[in-house]
Image (cartoon, rainbow, N blue to C red):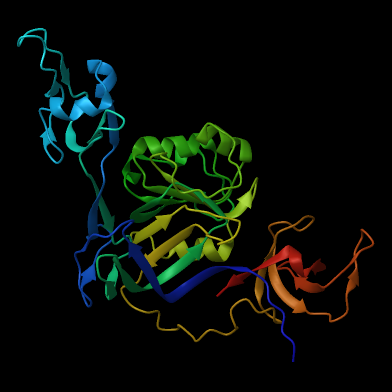
Length: 374
């Protein structure tokens, strides 16, 4: 029997989640299999090569490039301080010598008799990789990184900016459809992950940044507010490297849109618990969703096996409509007609029937929905 599939967002009270923590280049892994780590623990570290700084001694000393080597006061591999002499001409009768001081601190990497240039390599740049999620180390790749596993509550968002962070969960809103305004952000939210309801204003985000919050999460954001926050129009690219001082995630979309009640209730149930958050988003090949990860001290007693196959369209599955006229509405699959349906535009498409909480039903193209994975 044929099956139909569609992409979806994962919102679940429990899953066993793994994260791979990798170094950009070979380095030292500081944990072993079986170790228990917290989000702030350093699991691997290395050093990136420092900046390359060329100095054209041939020009500065008015010498042919091949003569530069004989004038060097430092040799390859020697350390050099800022403004320390690195080369000197022989002068005339020991007088009228030309001395060149280094404009950079670092190490003499190369002295070229072909170009007359000296390369000063800057100090190595330390790189430390943190665990990001508290859990247990289940595998280690020598000189590369490790994999961490934890039982977590997990929420995928629609869009985010800002990188990895963590903090305890606090609530700014009392309901899933309440707008996040500056007066809801208080000084005691410093270092926390703030959970909102509906649209969050740029003023609220700025207030959250001022009080030192780690992240702010809500149902929606206006695209103009996002532009104001970033200072530029965001193109089609990967986010997550913005240096905003706070991570921002929307769970539903852009505009006046409330957080799904189920998502809001699940996050509210973990107030005071530590959450790891990453706003990195990529919508092209290699899709990446922003995420909220809440490590669980214990597995929910009523946790059941997965009812549906991941991504499969079936009667009873929860989904969100992602196109007008029902954009943002959440409902259940109530029917899966096999025959193509003629749309208002006159074109034919595979459709499904959605039943909304109000009892209303609608026929929606299958391409216009995304599943909310349990």
